[in-house]
Length: 215
Image 1 (cartoon, rainbow, N blue to C red):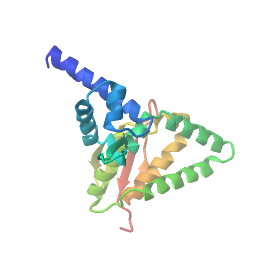
Image 2 (spheres, helix red, strand yellow):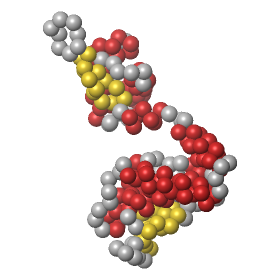
Image 3 (cartoon, one colour):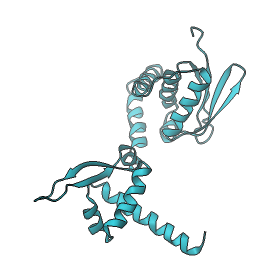
C-alpha cells in the first residue's frame, strides 16, 4: 500500500467514525449528515453504503418533506453497533453480582446465574444436527458475543478453548459469573457441559462437552 492510499484509507476511517458518532445521536437523512460533516451527498451515500454492508448502519423510516418531494430515508445505528459503543455493561454486571453476593450464598448465586444463562439461551436458535455441528455452532456464538474460541476433539468429548472471555471484567470480579456462560452453552448445545475455565490470569473460557446419556 502506497503512502497516498494509506492516507486515503485513514481519512475514510476517520470520516466513518464521525458519521457513526452522529448516528449515535439519532436518525439522520443523507442531507443532514452531509451538512453536519461538510461532505457532498454522494460522499455520504458512499460511506453509508459501506456501513450498511458491514451491518453497522440500517435504514429506519423516512422523513416526509413538505410538497411533492420524495421522502428521504432515515439512517440509524444497528443495535449491535450501538451496544459496541457502551463500556457500561461489564461494570454494571460486576456491580449487580456484588450486590447479590451480600444477600445470597455462593450456592444460591450460582443457581441464579445458571438461570440467567438459560434465559439468555431462550432467545437464540435451538441446536440441531450432530454433536460436532452443535459444538461448532455454540463456539461461533461465543465468538459473536466477544470471545475468541477454537474447538478440539478429545476422545468422545469436545473442548471449546477460549483465548479470551466475553465477560472477563465481571469474571475477574467474581468467578461465579462463569456459571451463566456455562448454562448458556449447555442449553444451546443440548449436551453435558463441564466448565474448565482458566482464571489464573486474564480469564479464558474452556468448556468440555459430551453427549448426554439420554441422547
